[in-house]
Amino acid sequence: MASSPLKSTRTGERRLGQKPRPTEVHVNPLGRAKPPAEPRLFQQAAGRGRARALACFLAALPLAGAAGEKWRVYENCTLVEDHKANDGDSFLVNCGKRSYLFRLYFVDAAETETSFPDRVQEQADYWEVPVSRVTAIGEEGKRFTAAFLKKPFTVYTHWEDARGRSDRNRYYAIVQSGRSLLSTELVRAGLARVYGSEADLPDGTTAREYWKDLRQTEIAARKAKAGAWKERKPDRPPLKPARTAGAP
Image (cartoon, rainbow, N blue to C red; front, side, top):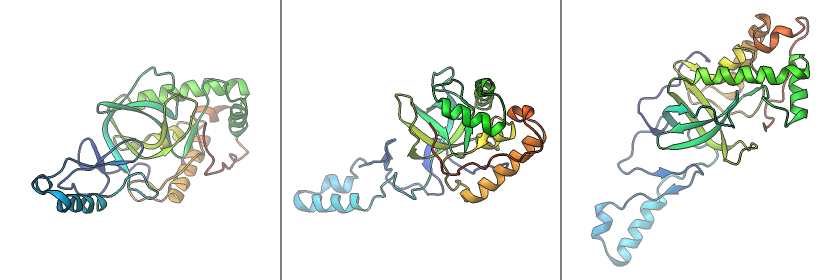
């Protein structure tokens, strides 16, 4: 799964697998549908008939952002380099004329500083490295992500709140560049653990299937002593993470 592309055929923002509608529904980042410009039919109507027709039309429009809503797709996105919130699994992104802060589903990259000492200790325990090494691994993960996102990439999001310490809203996302998913490549490089929030993937792969793929990728990274695994004891399997735990 990890090596197969998540297919898309149009540029800009759209809904995955959905044919374009004659009248576009504009959706803001909070998931609230905004009514489109009135078609000529409504401009020609008057009084109660016009109001009833407009009410019926708007009632039939789909609302975005609800549970189970299809993925929102943003293509040709670019990384806002050197932003203070950027690290291995969170980063500020330009999508068209707007910018959003995204956090990856499924993975947790090493911290780049020690504001959350409990999490730093947890990561040190996971990789069996000294606590003092965690932030260095985090900086390596940050550089890896910046290099991965050097070329324009695609973001898939449900606008699910990912919390975070930044003063900007942060949302969970799947990020793809070329034929690769950033979450998979961070695990392959030994720079992120398999941990965090989940979602079924845009190509139909279930969250459960992708967890299994990531675990196999992690086992291979450990055997290859990639990234954080290079200092790890080889005779102990990795700690099993809580699959749905949140991330700071």
